[in-house]
Length: 200
Image (cartoon, rainbow, N blue to C red; front, side, top):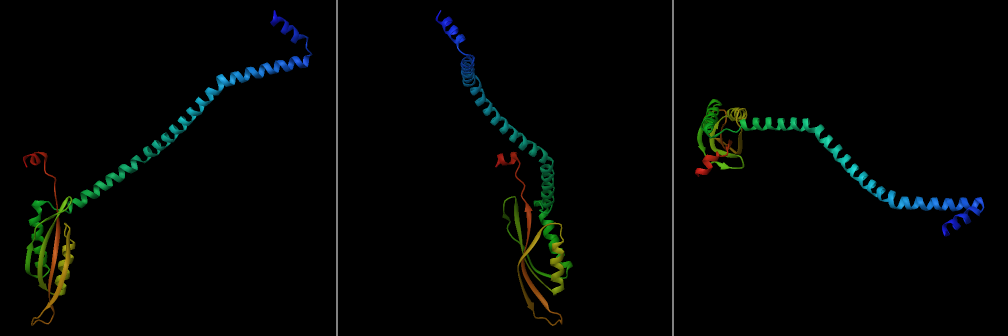
């Protein structure tokens, strides 16, 4: 009955006041609706947007990487090819004697007199071993030049280091040189097979 009185009371009010009360009730309903329904959902929407942004960034990064995969594969294949080419210049254990003989033959062909040709002990490194050869040769400057030039053209890597050159007194008109140096070649160390490693 009190409610009826209130409604009757409101209905007797001037139109402007009734509109004002109606507007207030609408505002109250909107505030309650926003506070309990929209506000929690807006926070959830913000979190979902952040997650979507993160996923979009990751997707863009993945697409960029996927786009570069052919380039990376081409680079990998090129590096593997270069490694194989480099390894062909490192002889294996069986090829070392023939390589040492080749160096000796190159010296004779160049016109040098070989006074000392002494292979030293191998020096193991990471995946290769150094094979030093101490040499003392005698001949003209042209013969020395030809020898070192021909050694540089060998299919295997041979480094010449520690060169010491002196002149030799002879009755010949052109000067004769005596050269001492270290010719170092390299051997590829193959990893032992699993069966061999177990036996050791």
